[in-house]
Amino acid sequence: MVCRRLPQSIANLREIDVIGEATCTKYGRDILSNVTAFMASEKVEKPSSSSDVTTLNPGVQMSPSLPLT
Image 1 (tube, one colour):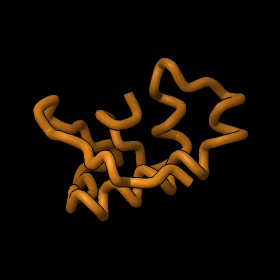
Image 2: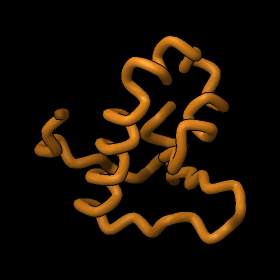
Image 3: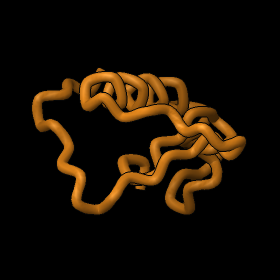
């Protein structure tokens, strides 16, 4: 879900059904950092709407070389 939604903030991360408050608190910044790195490596544009969420086309392939930090 995170890969398809590409949240840009902790608030956006909380909107994802499978992400709870404990996950946001413990891993939220790391998840957002990885989303930002993915978007940069794949040249995905940041959302232009006020919702701050990008939804990827299901056909978009993610790079397997992106390290998780």
